Length: 444
Image 1: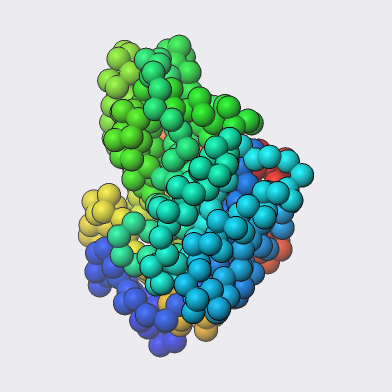
Image 2: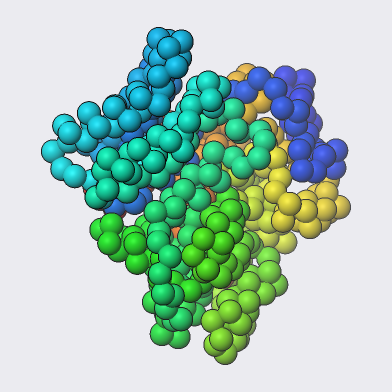
């Protein structure tokens, strides 16, 4: 039986039957918990090989990004330019960037193939002429490529989010070139898509070259992505990158969202086959394997309460529905807002399991909720582990490279392992950028 909402949880927790779609919570003062496995703009930018990052911002803004570069052992690819009060008052922010970048490049022990320049909100407040800045930099350093990136928190609630912009700018250095008909990119992910997934198998087994930025080792390999005729994205925040590349390079964009419903998975894979011009597959065996894996996990986990959060997957409602349809006991979902493609799953959950709790993760009241439980809880995701106090948790972010029926099989196995074997949640979730604790071995 589900426990009622406690008084201290009100405003930060709502039963799904009472939740508004797509925004179940008011936007107000926010709390940031210490589950740090999701990637930020530093981690993502470092996916481009042989580049150097330069952050231009006030000193107080630098602490987080400097620590990110240090924690991932990539401080040698990172520099900063501090914007001081006199730069704002004297109006020389353009000269500061141009001269600062020049000073950094003159002192680097290597020549980067490209430089990612991250400007901040202060440049927009003072009307810094950024097009002029990049024009001058490209004139001064014709053998180095420059692209604009942004550390701009004022853009979080309107227009494209910083995450969407960063995933787009990640591919802004690709050049228009002759497209290869049998060449495909998967874009917008921080982790390589599993080789065993049907998505990858359909592409490779039909003789197509597959490229992902996560697999590139050199800048030249990164540039090869400009040759592909099709870009595939399955992370919602990468859709803008697909649109951008379709307009800039003429590459067709195919959005095949990560999902958990068998019909939707099959529909996505059929669309892939159509786009590639190859024969559609029979997925009955794949469905059978996924069902067997879920049934096996359910027998082990039984009616143990399950908490899911949005950092584990872009589709937490879809995952909750899948698990409930196979006999699992999903009691709570930690998510601050819902994406449009989850509407069907939202309606299904509200109609069939109306008392599931939806918790915010950034609401200030979440700082005070009880993070201990007398019963065992299986947490799917770092934030679910943090807020429930559970050491039985699945430690992946953004789907972990798993996709489709094969991804469901692997996730079911991870759930069994997490249920049977405790982890040290406090230790593991403090690492910023899961997989980037050791840059050389995990990020490239």
